[in-house]
Length: 73
Image (cartoon, rainbow, N blue to C red; front, side, top):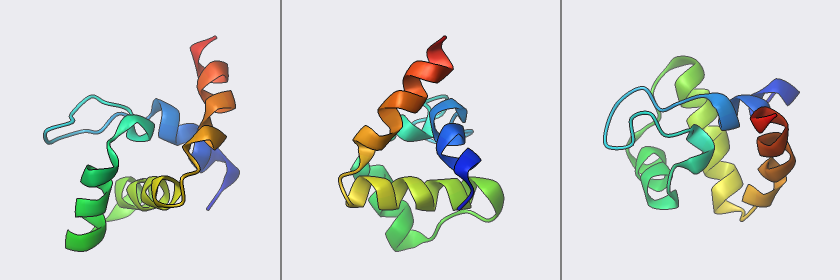
């Protein structure tokens, strides 16, 4: 994981599927869990989804709050 990956979670939109357009940091836990069971996509998207899954699974979403505030300004 790179430090920039956390910032990308709050600005990177899901490119396809039911939650298309929603920021990766805003994807529901059950959707991230589905990817964890079925397999994450290849490349950067898969890496970021796996990171978001770990954050959600360990109840650490609050870590992203300062990054959200920074991206809104």
